[in-house]
Image (cartoon, rainbow, N blue to C red; front, side):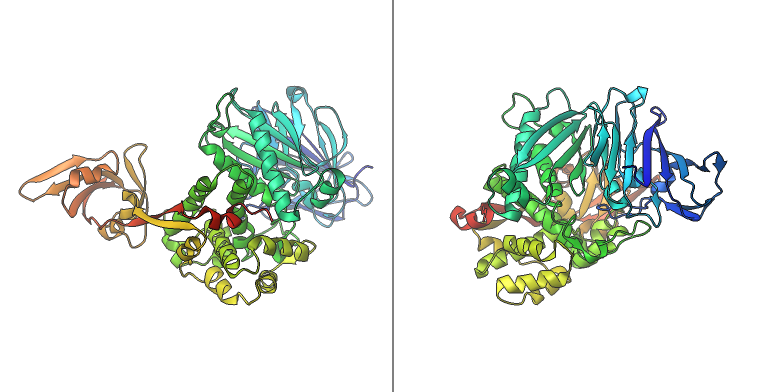
Length: 592
């Protein structure tokens, strides 16, 4: 079939990082409007993709059609009746993230939200995508979850999407990447990796990814057999992982049947090494997180995401559930898949717990508020972010932990069962907080309205210590690092640069500010001062000795200032340790 909307994507100039897009609209409206999205689902920030669009032209046959820009991201074309409209334009692509588009001599990548104008009024029509293998990239391959219509062996050719939503939910990877495959619970999975070093152990990554996918399919759908019966249980017929390995980078973005990932290439497993790099566990957690989104946010959705509005922010108070609960299960399912042991999982949980405890903003902002404010706060980090906000990822994960451990203590059910019940209840429609509360009450045997009010909409401390200890995990107090004791976050790559001054800490009371360069410290008496240059923050205790007050020497706006810093008493942080493995096993290793 020839779709009524057709996008032809080709390289305009590799070295200028330009794609050329030709959009053909078979039956345009008399005043046809088109628009480029301002955001991409899964990343809650208005990113103004239209800033990269240039040279937009409109024609009907040999006639130039009048084109008028309406606002920052939309245009209107005056069209003659019954004549196809052809729009052509270029898109600059040099963003290495998973959210937008990239093009250079080694690799191409794009999301449809960056390249494909939306044809207003025809969003639910079939959309065709044609990827052209020009001479400069004829040796490349293509990987995309889009449905192939007519393609060559390398993947170039025509693809078809049922709607605009489906089109832009199918990212495209192009280049000379590695490609591998595995089957999880009867579902074919493909994994492509760009940018890996020669030492990369691809077989290890494929085997571990298979374990993750099988654990998550089992989580959502129970024990599976083989073949068609198992395949029918999963909501996707196939799945594509696209990983770009770079010198320094990390992130992922979920799609309905795929995910785009970016990682540090030093974190990939290496041939001949039994113990992978420490960062490999972080990458496994990222794979687990994005794959879990196949169910939780791509199919189970908040009501506000039932139909995306690509022109503006789409507000919801439920990211604590869709991102936070996903963040709880991403590491826990690594444990259940056998990729980390109990101690390894507790280290991951410990990191999340301390991240939240070291965020003063948790006393000001609830996770429901953090969800709503994601568009203006979470993705726009500045020096005051830890003081004013809390992450719906990390605290949301701890809220999930509290619900899970509470349900297990009371003996009626687990959060695993609640998630599966929500899947059965809401996969065909929106998921609301009321649905969550109703399933909790139905399976838990009582109302959990007080817990929802306190943990989700309130800012009180979560009952983590008690719940963990009652599940066989000891919560030990140990001295915190000096930066936490002072209430600071610093960079020490080139001297000591103050990045954040945490609310209520000793550094704030002394008058330190973000952006200060901490040069040195002076101790002793006025009559006999002793001054020292600092290169690392920990050197402060070396030179302070027994002094309880010191004079810090900082540079601010090229001025040298002396501030009096009172050294606070030692503070503690938590360290989790397994005390009773048998008591913790139903939680950590459960596959029911």
